[in-house]
Length: 257
Length: 268
Ligand SMILES: Nc1ncnc2c1ncn2[C@@H]1O[C@H](COP(=O)(O)OP(=O)(O)OP(=O)(O)O)[C@@H](O)[C@H]1O
Ligand SMILES: [Mg+2]
Image (cartoon, rainbow over all chains, first blue to last red; front, side, top):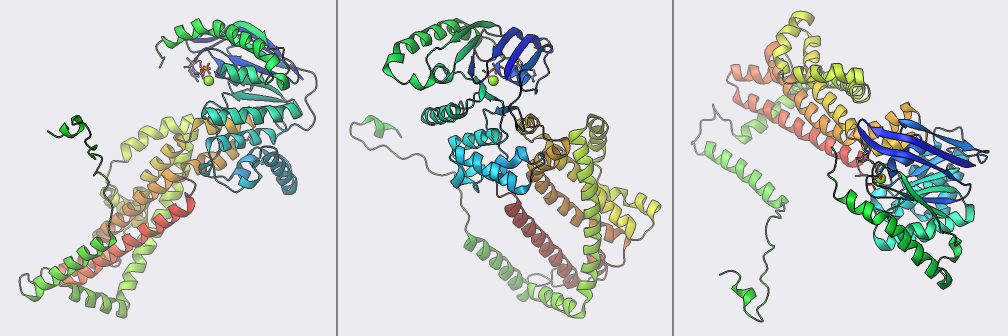
């Protein structure tokens, strides 16, 4: 499945947020989205996932959806969005409950998602008993349980400390390398983007426009190796020069509201 | 000077982080309670206070025992409990429905919010005479007064509880195409439960207050009527026995609610 995003314009009342953002997401790629704070990244993801109605624009798919997907476009949220009164297993089961599945089918899907995210031993725990990293693993398990065709991740690791972020990046990459689920991944972190992305879309400050789409070129498996180091360092320099001035100006803007 | 210690070379850092962490001692609480009763009993035994105005703890206890043995206490108490129970259940059921509707639908909110703001501050006991005119002097007018008193705090607890459920939980459910009904039952209401439970605390004490007041205005039976009659007859030991029962009732209900909160809100 290929995804075409074409947002001509999006505004909240008088606040223009996106202005001519068009790109295509290729099947099986991770597309990272970076840009200064407030430039409309979450809005863009919301539009793609059907949670925000665009002022003028259209998101469409091309090609067949993968078979058996219960929720083709699935979010992973920055603040995890877990139901605090439900156990880990019940949280993961939540998106299955309104589908026609027998209890044993549902339990099997939940057990499988917990196993893939390393949560099997925590099935009965409540969110408040888990560390931030474990909570986001639950968020990822809940996203995987519905067999998504497209993952929409909005700064999934930014609420975590640097070491946990590192660990989860590795785990996420492992998962992705096995299944290659297409993903749009919003992050502020250039290193995270360069670790995961096939391509990086750089947005300008608000109203967000595409400044550049940078192709990383090195396969994800090879990015830890010394051969890749120079290429990645050059790419990092390039990305930073693209967002540096934008970020500096955005940083000095007064907050609306 | 307090901080010379820091300026002198080699001096130890002075601890300054103490206080502002009060604890509680069960022993002190029990001792104070027992002490109060002893002082009270002594004041009457030594003739410092007339037992006509303030009966001694021993007298109150014996009045309480006699009332229990004769079955009179239970007769009044059971009548009051039925009034509280039916009024509270009615007011709570209506409050849950209206509060939920106000939290979810624009029309209900637009109509309900000004209405609730205008009617909530009225002391509901002031409406009893009107309700008696409408519904008669019997049980219905008392139950209605209690139900009204319970209704408003419940509406506000449910409405604000649902309103404060994090928006992102609802977006999460929508992102999985969870149907509206399920979002209400699985997210809005459980998320509002802490607020609803604290609303129950308010509504239960309101119900207790209103049943006594209503029974003092127009009833032959019930704890309120019993306390009023005892006062009219200068039977202060009976009066105090009735008041003691009300206090114990309040404690029991409070303990039951605390228990329910611990059981239902363990996830917090
Ligand atoms: N529902 C809304 N109503 C009105 N304005 C909104 C709404 N959501 C976002 N905005 C505004 O739109 C702009 C873009 O917001 P958005 O959350 O998409 O940015 P972002 O790039 O995700 O920012 P961040 O990097 O801080 O997450 C911001 O100025 C924000 O204040
Ligand atoms: Mg954002």
